[in-house]
Image 1 (tube, rainbow, N blue to C red):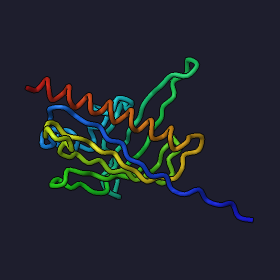
Image 2: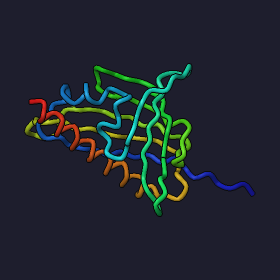
Image 3: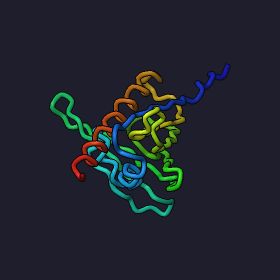
Length: 160
């Protein structure tokens, strides 16, 4: 009897920024190779020469029992829409357990009544990750996105 394949994971996280408008946040965000400046868990991010499109290498280093552990991922930029302020990318080779993973970031006007600030949405469709639950994965993405939002706010406040 064949094993039943677990369905795809899907999810979305939203971060709200107070003050900065979408047109202020988007230029910081759309630089695909600058991710390490915004995502707190990434130490390095740079373009990899590849004939298959715009590919970035992202990595972070942690210590476990005195030993440095490097987690890395190659990611390909799939689409950028400057009008809608969104970009989509997919995970390629990695050592973090991602199989099929496609994510989209959107920078949107605030959905609040006071029209101040903006919001960032990080949505994804992925194969389940061995050793993780969907809830754990969503928690990591949400925490990461909230950290990105804080970094965007700090950068924009210091440029005023």
